[in-house]
Length: 471
Image (tube, one colour):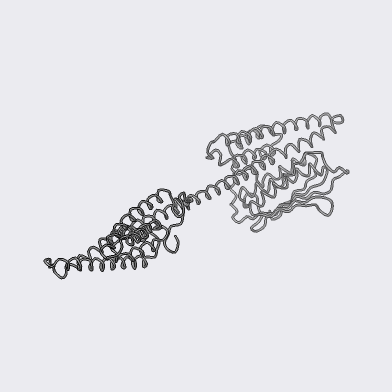
């Protein structure tokens, strides 16, 4: 709206105007043109009648009517001007349609209510005075007619209210309804924008969740397969070295490599089966929501099988238990078996535990995620030693502290000048360790040592250790 109450040229929901000049629609322009034509005809007739009664040339009265009638064309643009013109021509007893339509447009516009009330009062007063003087003149011209004194004022007041109150009240109603509809439209537009933003954010969160889940799945697959395959390569190298010198040891190493290969393939198939099950679900429900947990359960077979190599019956029992879903997965108790596998592959590994003076049965157990993360850090660090520092001595240190659990894996320089075992590396081992540790609010540090070796350190917070349950 402008200062005079005119509506800006916009349609529904902010759409641009489709009509000429200040009209929002062409049909509005046609309506105003029709009202202006009817008002012009009325003013022409009333102007000629006024000029005849005032002993003025009829052409002058008709010219006045021709100027006043078309003012309705600007009623939407300047409603105040239309009402003021209707008030100005009231003494000439012309402009009835102009006054009614002008008051309606003024009341329906956004002109301040005090201005609307003032102009409506002026219209009532002008109509009252004009009607009173006209009726007194008509009564004076009829000597035989003697009405009561109160009749003329009452009739003048009634006529003024009839010509003023209905268009003003109807205009106020239409204006209020129009503003209500506009506010509802604006609210609907706001809700649409908010829903669009929420949908965009939901899509971003879903994409982030998918990326996070892919990262976790990749990390679990790396932890399950990489360590075992690395040991297979180390054993294969040892097999090649002793094939001719010690056939019995070579046969044992060959059987061990075959077992490790079969176990790695079995674990890989189980992981791919979990992924296919999750991808087949149209909606991410119970089957898809626990994919990382199910992968962790499959990954726990590494701990079950590695800890029982050489004992087929016991391994089969633990493997079947892991397939059903081990909620904890690898834990601190399996570090000894993990270190033993590296020793069996020819690595010299030392395992030391600080703060472990109490008996194992009464020692506190940490959250499953904390113990599993420590196990994976040690596993990946030893795998890197096999890959990049064959023949080097390694030391694994575990420290139980108040409110935290620390682990460190350090290896010395390669022996015999060998710099690398020739194993492929994707560079994801250290990244995966860092992601696991930082996800639990811990600190991870890795880097070379002054003696030419490499060190991996992680400190994990343990705010609420759970008591160990035997059995």
